[in-house]
Image 1 (cartoon, rainbow, N blue to C red):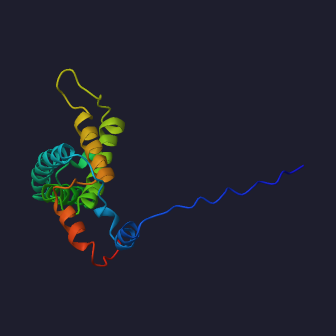
Image 2: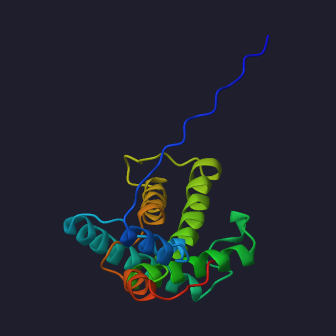
Length: 177
């Protein structure tokens, strides 16, 4: 009635000594400092986008930090501590993006903030994706969310402080988060 499942054959993989040493050195590296080799033009595009994106959130976060618990009207329903957390996430995320330092951590905060903003525009405000009259829409929040998810997935690129930390820390043991 039952058939026995045959085990899969073991595939032997040969690796040279340098590859094994590199794997041993990098196994303790932080996941947030993981880089893929890519063409220089991709790194330049990531840098340009990161600088503009970071500047936008630095300005937005700074403005919100002037009244961290009161930058939205009370009718919004968001409690003050949540507003302060969003303001901090935007300010820290903007600085993080500008410097290319702890970029993936900054992208996590921006992703959460922009996911909530997108949800708020769709579910509460009932805004369209694009408003033909130029009124409110959830397009900017959605685009900012997607950009944060890109940086969360691929990192800041090679032209960043994260890359410098990864390059100098590869011979040292780093603590995992």
